[in-house]
Length: 292
Image 1 (cartoon, one colour):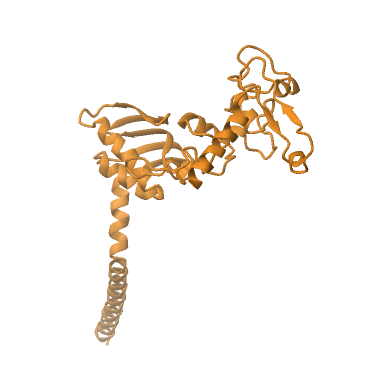
Image 2 (cartoon, helix red, strand yellow):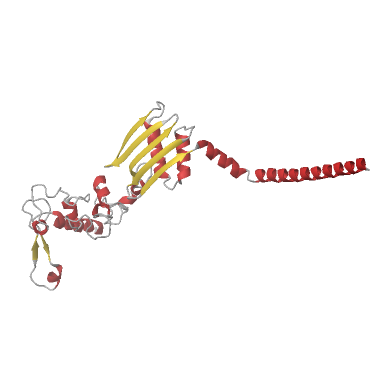
C-alpha cells in the first residue's frame, strides 16, 4: 500500500511540473493555515515552456521549444527544465558547454541523454534504481563505456581499411571501406565491441590487437579517433613496424646473450694482442742472434 502511495504522489508531482496552465501551492503558507498562494504558469502557446521564461530571454516564434539558440546541443525546452540560460552555451562559465555537462550526475552528458532518449534532469529515467550511465546493453557493457563515435584508418602494403562507427538512439551505425574482400562488417563490429569491453588497452596492446584481428603482416600506419558516451575521448596516430616489434620482443626475452658475446669478443681481442706481443719478442731475439 505504501508503494502505491509513493507512485501516486510522484505522478502528481510530474503532472504539476510538466502540465501547462496548472498552478502550484505554496506549502509554507498552507502549513500556517493561511490562504493558498497560487503561482500560475501561463503557457498560451502550449509548448511546455512558461511564457514568463520565454519573455525573460526574448524567445519567440512557432518552434521556440525545439530551437537551440546558443548551439550547445540542447533545445530551449531542455534548457528550461534544466534551468539553464538558452542564450549562453556555457551557463555556469566553467569552460564546458551545457550540452556536455552531466547535470544529473549519471555519467552521461546532457546532449548524449537526448540522443539516447533518457532524461538529462533525471539520473534514473526508468526508475529501476540503476543510473542511466550504469544501465547495460545485452552484451553486458555499461552505456557510459559505449563508443559514441569512432573513426579508424589503417594503411599497409596489403590492406586499406576505413571505418566510421556511430552509436545513436540505441542503434549502432557502421560504415566500412576496404580492399580486403574477406574482411566482413561483423569482424569490424566485433573489434569495436571488444575495444569497449577492454577500454583500458594501451597503445601497443591496441595495435597488436589490430594486427591479429585484421591479419596485418607488414608495417602499417594507423589513425584512430573516438569518443565514448560518457564524453571521454581517445586518439592514436602511429606508424607500426611489425618487424621491429618482433625484434624488440626477442631482445627482451634474451637480454644477456649479446653481453656474453661481447665479453668473449673482448677476451679474444686481448689474447690476440698478447700473441702479437710474444711473436714480436721472438722476432727481436732472432734478430739479436743473427747480429752476433
